Length: 117
Length: 114
View 1 (tube, rainbow over the protein chains, first blue to last red):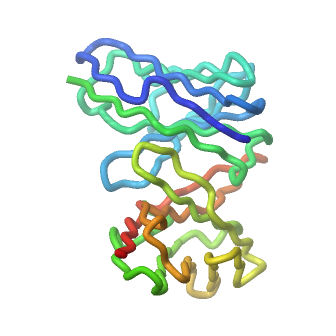
View 2: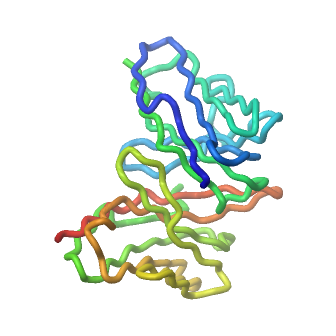
């Protein structure tokens, strides 16, 4: 159990366009979902935490208008990178948790490689 | 400001030998630590954890040691197997306002040679 999927696995988009990444918990209800970004040879950096039905909590330095997060149901959260630029190219990973913000109960998706040309 | 540090980007070990992956942290408020394993094109998977009230936790071939005074933890894998080849992330729990989040290190790529 505790499988998390992400779609797409990789995406290439042109500068100025928007791209949506989906994160789904396949066999459990995720009260909390997290979005991370990882640059090459760097650690996973938490971007935002989202609870179903409420607004996401963004980490310092993450633009909420640029990275739109929607946690519409207990099994789906989406991250939309708006007006993407080459510097947004990165590896985006989501995780899902059954608990309310229990960091150590996170199950990670396989990640999405975003390349902005 | 990297609060969780994994200073060795890579480690190569012979099959059957011990692998020791190290992790240092700077924030004394961290009270729970985890190790994750990540294969290419997959998300990190939880491996083993340790609470700050303990100095050792063992699970099969994996043992995590915590030295609070030195703000250092290590993951020991013995005996190492080729299937252990992966990137290992050290993470700490940061608690704030009733919620918790993971703070990750940069990872260490372990290669176990047959």
